[in-house]
Image 1 (cartoon, rainbow, N blue to C red):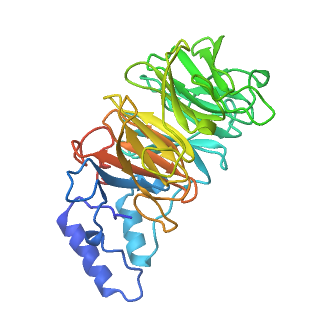
Image 2: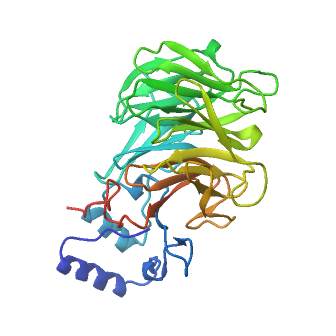
Image 3: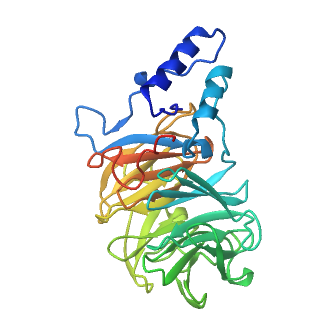
Length: 366
């Protein structure tokens, strides 16, 4: 983990002198040796760079000079509130929201402001098994609670607003998406072997009124089998991860079937265990696959553009063992959750510099 940079050269020089004179202190890894993975690798033109990994609150909270000095002197490492079993992720203007099914809350990582927020840890709006989540253009947060079988709504800072849906309306709700206007919320009901409720349930996001269901259980075009997640793309259409049929199904927001893409297989462009889904401003679709240990980028027609990441049991940048949730922010950065490593890896498009956009480097400690 990178160390805090102090505001004056004199203070930094003093710290380095002190550390060099101490014996037995824990050393800091040489960050200069780390080269950020690039996709695709050379000699092809770079499209995405790995930028950062989120593991705990320490990755965004600003450390004051006194605390950093004590760490240097004692040789201790910086710690923070870590993830237990992260599942879903969504982003609004640099604030990263991660659902955690083990810790029963949503963690908000705000790098730009150096803040960390816990959401849903207490009443009102207490969460029990938060899974899929999404935000509208205003930053209103919608969280699918799989245990309680409803959707809990908060403002951007975690203040509880309202609850949508009820236990008798779902079989196994897991994922959701909301349209940018914040008028419709689409809840993915995964169903199960003994349930025919493999569908998307649509509500009025403001009143909580049930509006209609999209699709039914089956393997024909327009039918779903164990759907996982969904996203509203820039074309205004609903893209659903049809997990049991190993494909992506596309509907209008009113539920009219439009098209499908993807097949089962082990090659790039196919699906084995598709999970999270996101989309960018150009309408490209990003799909996480737990078996491949990566995410794949498709154009709106379903043609493969680029795979990113690899399945690997060693913790590292762009290494995944159990990826799940995925999101794309306003600047085109991609955030992918890995449940096994308890992390979120962040990738930036080559057109965006590391210090550009909403997810900019944290400010220096004052």
